[in-house]
Amino acid sequence: MQDAWVPLLLSLKVAGWATALDIVLGVAAAFMLARWRSPLRDVVDSLLTLPLVLPPTVLGYYLLVLLGRRGVFGAWLDTLGIQLVFTWQGAVIASMVVAFPLILKSARTAFESVDPHLERAARTLGLGEAAVFFRVTLPLAARGILAGAL
Image: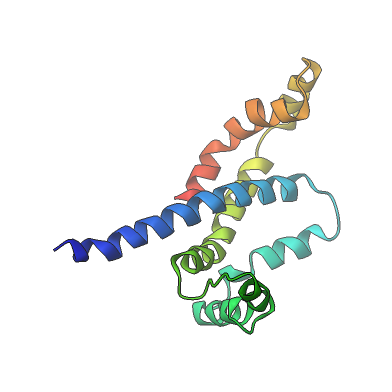
């Protein structure tokens, strides 16, 4: 009877880790894309959202090519004694790749909707950049980030 819970617990473990890591990476990338003014911004955004439009089989194939024992990163990891393919950690990476664009788009939209006047006002009151981010920008963008995480 307890063996019946193993797949469910594994799924929850993979989903939890993938979501937590994607939130951290997605929020950081979204904030940088929202604030970065460069002609390359659209190119980087397109590359980061590419998994959204690629079929899952193509993504899986590319992940196997990259992380397999003979892959670009997989061969290097194999020399360290690390194997990711067909492990729960590999499932976390695959889940992260698929979900990352969803969190990125939602968080970027949330950061772009934050009124820059509020951030400027916080700076004039003596807050540093980190404090402005954590006390003003992040709380105002929290709903969009949460929407992307769900």
